[in-house]
Image (cartoon, rainbow, N blue to C red; front, side, top):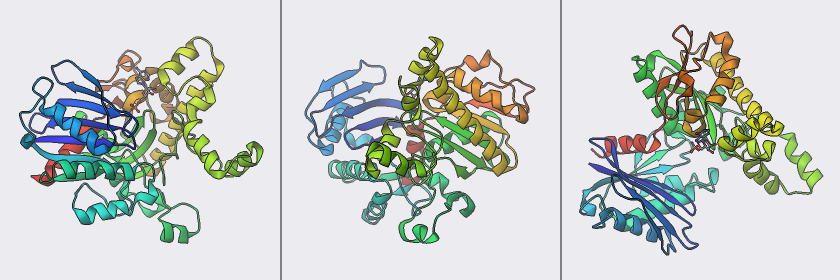
Length: 396
Ligand code: AMP
C-alpha cells in the first residue's frame, strides 16, 4: 500500500508518499505561500527536483497540485491516484481525547475541532488539510496521528500544573507535550538498536531541533515531557523562550509597554537562542559565531545545553534511573558540540562520550564509550514514516 503523509500548516503543506511495504519514500515535497501566491517543490525519488511558482489560493488547490505532480507523466511516481491506499495526517493537538492514531470520520473531525482552542495556530490548519484531501480523495481512508497522543500515558502528577484545579477542569489547562510521534519512534528504535524491549528500558529522548523537547520514557510509556499546554514550555529553543519565571510576562509588559499577547509573541518568536545570541536561531550559525569568538553565541549554546542537561537530571530522578539517552532531530542528530556539552554534565550517570563516534551526523550511532554506564546514542527521527506506519496499522 502507498500512503500519502500530509503535514499541513497555515500557509504551507509538507507531503511524502511512502511505500508501506518497503518503507521507501517515493516522493516528497513542500507547498509554500498558500493563500498568498504559491510555490511547489516536488522531489520524486531518483528523479530531478521540480520547483514551480504556481497559484495556490487555497489548501485544496495545493493538494490538487501535489496529486497532479504525483501522477504526472514526467515527474510522477504513480500511474493513478487509485494507488494511494490511505492518507495519514499529522495533527498537532488531540487534547485528552486522543491517546492514539485514529481513523478520521465526521465525528472524529468534530472532536479535533473541539481541540482548536488548545492549538489555535496549528489545529485549524491541520483540519483544512484534512478537508482538502477529503474533497479530492473522498473514498481514500484517512488517519489522524497526534503530536500529543504518545504523552497521554503521563501520570496526573506530571501533567497537572500548580494552578487552581478548576482551570484544568474548565479549560483543560495541563501538560500535554508535543513531538510525541518522534519520541515514540526514536525510543522504539533505540530499544531495537540496543536489542532490548522498550518495556525493559528507561529512556530519555532529547528531540532537539528548531523546537526542542525532552521526554522520559519508562518501560515504553511517556511519563513526563518538557513541553506543556503549548510547545512554548521546556528548554530554550530556536526562537522560543522555554521555561521562564511567569512573573516576567507582566514585568516586561510594563517596561516595554506591550500587551500580554505581544509579550507572548516575543516569547515565541524573538527569544530562545536567537534572542540570546542576536545572531541566529540556527545552530550552524551559532556554532560558527561561537568559534569566531562571539560571546553571546557561546552563552546561547551554553544556556541551551545546560537546560537540556537539567531536564536529563530531572527525568533520571522521575524514572529512578536511565538506561539510554537518545539525541534526535536537526540539532540532536547533527551537532556534536551540543551533544558533547550536554554529555559533560552527565558524569554522575557514568556517561563518557567517545569524541570520535560523536562526530556522527544524521546516522544511528552509539556515541558513548563501551564502558559508559549509561548508553548515549544518536537516533534519527522519521515522523513521516511513523505516521505512515500508524496509518497502515489502522486501515489494514
Ligand atoms: P529540525 O527542527 O529538527 O528540522 O531542526 C532544525 C535545526 O537543526 C536547524 O535550525 C539547525 O539549527 C539544526 N541543524 C541542522 N543541521 C545541522 C548541523 N549540521 N549542525 C548543527 N545544527 C544543525
